[in-house]
Amino acid sequence: MTTTATAYSRTILTTLHGREIGLDVNRSLVVKGDPDGVTFSAASGAANICNVTIQVVNNDGTALAGTRNLDLWVSDAATGAGLAAHANTSELTCSTGTLLQVYSAGKAWRIMTDATGKAVAVITDTAKTAYFIAALLNHQPFTQISTQLATGNFG
Image (cartoon, rainbow, N blue to C red; front, top):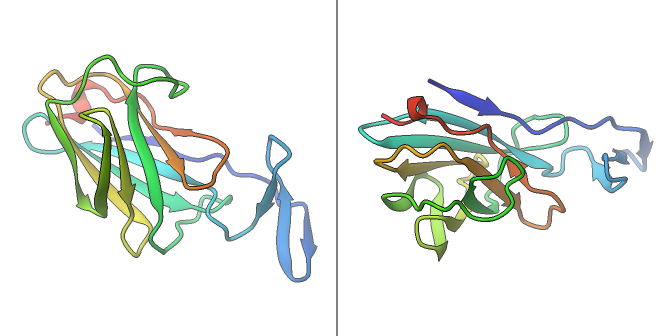
């Protein structure tokens, strides 16, 4: 089972000095081509493993190349508020990108994408917990939330 959630796109309102700019839903400035969020795609891996592909995108949903840091955490809430009550069976690893820091064992991390702007987080959980993956791209004012992981997302 593959689960996908995407960042919402924003309308570009005008051009200023050759750059397209606009306002997001919170009336914050958006510049076309700048990192604006992430997309998630979760797929089952080996036994008890879920591979979550995270791609940095611009406000049109176009994948952006370049290494970027992200804070990730698992949450029981669809809003991404708070950490999940249940920790993963083993620590998150990255098959693409780099795990930089563990904030809370089995629940929260800082990762770096590879040069293509992508990271693949490998989650091992024998309980196959139905939680959400939340991501905060450096200096973005909002959290991106995946769709809820389900048993079918784990091998």
